[in-house]
Image (cartoon, helix red, strand yellow):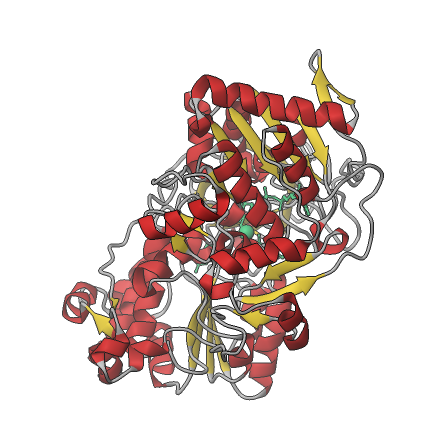
Length: 639
Ligand SMILES: Nc1nc2c(c(=O)[nH]1)N[C@H]1C(S)=C(S)[C@@H](COP(=O)(O)OP(=O)(O)OC[C@H]3O[C@@H](n4cnc5c(=O)[nH]c(N)nc54)[C@H](O)[C@@H]3O)O[C@H]1N2
Ligand SMILES: Nc1nc2c(c(=O)[nH]1)N[C@H]1C(S)=C(S)[C@@H](COP(=O)(O)OP(=O)(O)OC[C@H]3O[C@@H](n4cnc5c(=O)[nH]c(N)nc54)[C@H](O)[C@@H]3O)O[C@H]1N2
Ligand SMILES: [Mo]
């Protein structure tokens, strides 16, 4: 195997840093906070509050995310706040909200165990959601069947009864063919379709072209396998449809999500115990960050920022008007940096220089900022670009608060350790900056912040810390301290009384739109990117180095392509896209079908996969097409 030069793992940040004459140097907290606050003040005075952007941390607590969005809206006066939800499940939230009015996954983990059929669609749950996967394993032990829909035969797919290995970016043809087969076989749930949905006739007409054969040609999945999935899903008493980034990291991701929602609407596999639609969320608290309003279009509790009554309630509590318009999302903020209209950024616990698609373009945009403050636990590549670096505590073990998981369950986390050196809790830092900018914020305890959340967000109102403790976590919605929370959402759609049912869930008519980065003679292979069990995101927290157990970055190839290129595992290959070129050892993997290449995003200091990816984004959610890049792979001569 070719030798790598592994870098050492990152060392925790223990002191603030400020930039002087082009270099970062240690500074006192007073100096660093003064510099950070002064830069924000200068930019807001010169260009207005919308010249500011906040990237909030999906690893930190609900309380921290609530304070970060309040800082953005009250101290600065803009709605430009977002998090890495934009890079993964923003399309799931947008799709679910369009269908049902709220963006959460609909089921509880217990219902995953109690179901009859689980479809894992574009989800490598065995590697990326190992805790959730334990519930899947329990379901399997109880006799549930599992279908995996993934271009690669993943370790998840190896646990499944059936693997549907589709071509990248063909999920809509596949889902539409499943829908057509269900309708033609008369297996759709007419009671639910009539009661709980709208737009069936138009939808049914729209899937007509997607015969099993047409879908086989487009997706590469045999007609018989599509038919089997359709019949199994429609006939199951209870069925769970779970998806992740194979669905959402595409230029038409919200449509992809709607394609899956259509299947649940057709069969009535939503709104009842044991059936549901579940985006498995990525970061430990990315669900909670959005729920707290650390997104540009919603206030805490998923309340619409365009609703005047909602804004008035928050303005009264906070003493400042909320802007009556959506702020910029993460993707828009980066574009605004490029255009020179966003000039000051406060990045808390995000590493966009390595996680954003077309990363070198992102680096250029960040370089145009007048003022960049990065608050992290490590000196990342992003932090190394900052004017001020603020060392934070690690939320998962060095602070108190709550976090919210994919089943919408809010749970307590407790401080077990002090942050190292002079590092301080994220919330303390935000409050110290707020005080320098004229707001006398002093939160003694995380619980005080949580009680403020409860007073403003009806779906969290009944979750006191005492109750969270007693119940070992509570799922939202939880409107009062004496109510019973449902474990699943949208049972109203089954009501016989139309009043009680409310707005029916609309079917979506969807068009197939292949990946933006087209394959041609120069770039004939399809690169898709994702995760491995042993590493975490941009590798900052899991260490960049390889070990006998962690092989570092590879260009994973099918045996057929490897043979054609004349490479074997461990030999260096050069992989190029229309945006960049990197070099890494090949890894030949029979889990890949010919034409498909796989890389992770875990080792960007050695191999920055995102210098290859394309910035084509979903117009509704702003999520980039990380899952579909056109590439060329060549053997590096002479080794
Ligand atoms: N060990 C580990 N766990 C993690 C993380 C980590 O870095 N490491 N990161 C966390 C985060 S932030 C997130 S968002 C989640 C992500 O969790 P997942 O979404 O499960 O992880 P990925 O590997 O990015 O992508 C899932 C699958 O999508 C498939 N795929 C690619 N293109 C397509 C397509 O066109 N259609 C379909 N149907 N499938 C396709 C890929 O082959 C891959 O197996 O994981 C979380 N958990
Ligand atoms: N090619 C490709 N690229 C991708 C993806 C893909 O599938 N393929 N997936 C995308 C997805 S889903 C995601 S979520 C993004 C992830 O992208 P990022 O969120 O930018 O990457 P992370 O490596 O998770 O960075 C997390 C940062 O938070 C810091 N941190 C951790 N805990 C705390 C804390 O308590 N406080 C503070 N202040 N900081 C903390 C860590 O040190 C680290 O620097 O990457 C995206 N990029
Ligand atoms: Mo994510």
